[in-house]
Every structure is written in C-alpha cells, then in structure tokens.
Amino acid sequence: MAVTETGVSYYGISYVEHARRDFQEMIDHNCTAVLLALSEFDLDFRKPAIKEIAQAGREMGLTVYLDTWGIGKWFGGEPPSLFLTNNVGNRQVSAFSDEPLPAACFNTTAFREYFFEQCDWLAKEVDADGFFWDEPHFALPKGYASITGGAGDDWACRCPFCRKQFEAQYGYDMPRQLTMEVKRFRHDRALDILETVSRRIKAIRENSKIICCVHATLGTYYVTENRGYDNWDKVARSDACDVFSSTILSYQLPRDFFRSITKRTIEVAKRNGVGNQRWIMGYYQQPENLDEIVDLAKLYADLGTESLFAWTYRGGHGTVLAAPRALELWDAVGRAYGEVLKR
Image (tube, rainbow, N blue to C red):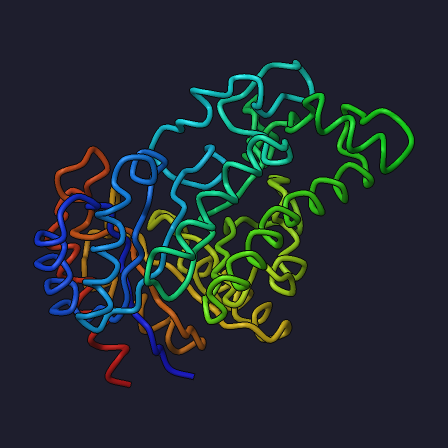
C-alpha cells in the first residue's frame, strides 16, 4: 500500500491567522496532515486558540491530530509540566534509590483525573480527526549503562501507589528487581490509562483515530529499556491503538536499522489489524546530503508505510533543536512527500 498521509508536527499554538499561513506552507510542502503539539501550558492558557487553529486546519483540507505533548513528562516532549509543579507527591519513584523522578506516576488517581479531564475537553470542544499518544513511557532512571550501551538496571515506578496496587494484585510487596510479575504489572498499567482514555474519547467523538507511537528500541535481544510499551503486539492490539507508530531514528544509525524497524512496525500493525505510521527526523540532525531524506521516504513507502510524518515544522527553525540547515531540511521533507504521494 502506498503512503496516503504525510504530515508534520506543529507547536505554534498562538494565533489562528499565523497558523493559516503556516498551514498553507505545509500544504505547499506536500503535507496532507498536521499534528498539533499541545503542552500543559497550551491546555491551561490557550484553549480558545486551540479550537480556532484546529478548525482552520480542517477548513484548509488538512487532517488534524491532537498530541498531548509532554503531559506529566509521561509523554515525550520538551515542555515543562504544570501537573508536576502542582503535585510534587505524584511523581514516579526509582526502584533502587527511592528517589522521586521528574515524571508523573500515571497510575495515581490525581494524574489520571487530570489527564482524562484534558482529553475529555479536547474531544468535546476541538474539531479534530484524532489523538496521538506521543512516546508514552515509564521514566528511565539513568545509572551505569549496560555493556551493550543501553540503560542501567534501575527502573520506575515503585512509588507507594504502585506498590499498593502491585500488592493488591499479587499478594506481596513489589520487588526492587524487574521480575516477570513486575514487568507484566508495568505493561498492564501502562496500557490501562491509554485504553481508558481512548474509550472515553470515542464515546464523545466516535470517529476519532487514535495513533500510538512507541520508542523504536531493539527490544528483543541485547537491550530492552523496559519503558512499559516494549511489547509492541500488546500495544497494537489494544483499545489505545488504531494506528501503530514507531518513533524517529537518528541519522547516525545504520540504514539497515531504519529498514528493520520499519519492517517490524508494519508487520506488527498488519498482524493486529491496525494502520501503520513511521517518522522522519526533521529537527536537530540532518544527513550530510539532504537528498537522503527523499531516499528514506521512498524506502519507507516501498516497505508499506501508510502514514509518514516528520518532527517538526520548518526543521525546528528558531528553536534550540533546529537542524543545522533547518529550512533546507524542511524543503527536503517537502520534496520527499511529493515523491511518495505521486506513487
């Protein structure tokens, strides 16, 4: 199946008249969709603008997705979390050191209520086509790296709330080691919040498309980072996933890795009867030859990618994460999209 959707993330959630000009530039760069990255500050402060900007995108013919960007630092993203500022007792906790971590424990009642309230509002008030779960993960405490270059042995979350839930389910205190029971508990709890909120969204807006984007790690042999979403089949067959997506890869990685991650993503999606999506790095890094981006998009298309997105608009121009030649990179993404949409 050919690429049928091309898009880019966008976090200029300020003024609709500016967004309209930016959306036209996206369309001129062969984008058919836009991902509105919504921080907790946006959701607290810019609610009227979110509604207007999403409506403008749809009026201009773009498919519009809502990304709960960096909420609770449980999802991926740079923006700070108001929830963490106001709820210091609801943080994830290191299993080894009992240290509170800069990420919300998404099992706690306080965080679930906060997150559900935000998503309920978006589903009711914002005319969008779907939601994007952006790299959800348990926090990953960094200790000494393993011999293969992966994460250390420490993990989260072993806060009082998680320990109480674990003991209620298994009848004994949660160990400090990642036993099979602990891994199963973490996988189940990581999906429960996404499944619950996805069902709530669809009860409000039945046709919402839910995209779940997981980290593209090896996950099967030497290294698994145990973020809670490492069992790709379990994620793809859940109620939290209409489209299974795996995240951006660094241009410094071998091209065989790009191929293997993309093949695995598409195979998991097909096996579980959902759509698939892949991502292009459109910020911070760039290949020496920007035509490689066109070649990469063609590779993804040849392997069967249906939805192809880039992070972020204009190559991150004007931010600390801008690519060295951000606007040239953005133009290369536009050329790449034009090539795969013509097929």
